[in-house]
Image 1 (cartoon, rainbow, N blue to C red):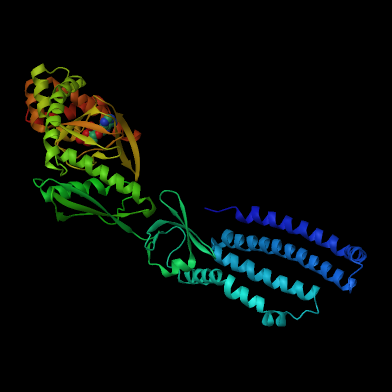
Image 2 (tube, rainbow, N blue to C red):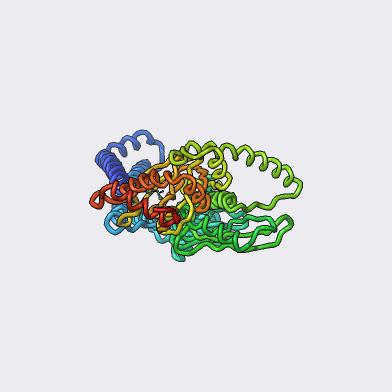
Length: 484
Ligand code: CMP
C-alpha cells in the first residue's frame, strides 16, 4: 500500500526550511547592527570586537545548522518518497537515517569552514581530547547499535513483516522497524518490544519469513478405543479447508505419544499468513471438536469425570429423540407420514453438527442420504466459471441432499453451514421404507426437485418444470425399485 509520506512530509520540511532560511537571511543582513550592539553592551572586555564577532558567527552557524537540517530532512523525504513511488523501493529507516546524518554533516562542515575560515577543523578533531572521550565513552553503545543495525540491514536475516522470536526471553512478534538504534517488534498482544540492535545481534533469533510456508503444530488426544486410522482421516479432512490453512501442502495428522489418559496426536499444518497463527490454531481446535462430534469420537479425559459425562449425555439424547420426531413431522414432504412412520424416521436419523463455514455436502461427491436442517442455516451454492453462485439459503425444517439420494447421481451443489448448524441425516434404507408405504410422496418430491433443478441451471438453460418433474419421478421410481 502506498504511503503518502512523500507529499505531506516533504512539503512540511520544505516550508519549514524556507521559513528558517528567511530568518537566517534577516539575521545575516542585520549582523552588523547586532555586532555593534553587542560591542556596546560588552564594552569592558579585553577585545570586545572579537567576542561580539564570535557570538554573531555562532548564531549564524546555529541558524545555518537549522536550515541545513530541515533542508536535509526535506531532501530525504523527497528522495526516498520518489524511490517508493516510482520503483516501490521502501528504504529501511536505517538507510534513511544514515543519509540524513551524512548529508547534514557535510553541509554543516561546509558552513563551519565558511563562517570560521581561520579555524583548522582537522586539527580541532585530531587534537581534541574531549572529542575522543565523548566518542569513546558516551557513544560506545550508540555506535555498537549503529554498526549492529548496519550488519542486520546488510545480512537481511529478516525483514519488516516477518514474525520473529528473539533471545532467551522469547519475545515473539511481527517486525515493524529496524532503526539505527533498535529492532521494533509488535507482539500478538499488541505490545511494542524494542530490542537494541547490539543485543539482537548477539541473541539467537527464530525467523518465520512472510513469504515462506511456515508450519504449526496443534495437539489433541482421543480415547484408546478410537481407531487411529479413522481419527487421522476425520481430523485431516476437518482441518484442510479451514481459513488460512495452505492448500499447497495437505496437513499431517500423526500419533505423538501413547499417553496416560489416551492417544496423543499432533496436527501439522502450513499457514498462508503466519502472523495469524493464534486465530488459526484456535480454528483448527474448533474444527477438530465438531469433526469428533460428527464422527462419534471422544477426547480422552480423566476417568473420574467420565461417569458424569455419560449420565448427562444420555439425558440429552432422550430429550433429542422427541425433538427430532417433531422436527421431521414439520418438514413439508413428511407431512403425510403417520406418527409411527415419523418415529421410525427419527430413530434412523443421525445428527451431525457443523461449524460456521464448514462444508456439509460437496458438489460431485457420491451421496446416498438426505439432510434436514434441525438447527441453524445452510447455503446452497454452485460454481460457475470459477465463481460461486448462491442458489438458495435453507433454514430450520428445510431439507437438502435429496437429489443424489433419489436419483443415484452425484451431488449437484455445495452446501455450507452459515452458522453452527445441526443437520439430521436420513439414509437410503429409511427412505425406501417410507416410499413403500407412501408412494404419493415420490410425486411431490419429484416436483420440488424439478424446481430446484431449474434454480441450479443458468437462465439460458431453463426448461419446462412439468416435463422435468415427470422425468425425475420415473428416475426415482426406477432407482428405488418402485412400480412405475
Ligand atoms: P444433492 O444434489 O444431493 O446435493 C446438493 C443439494 O443442494 C441438492 O441435492 C439439493 O438438495 C440442494 N439444492 C440444489 N439446488 C437447489 C435449489 N435451487 N434450491 C434449494 N436446494 C437446492
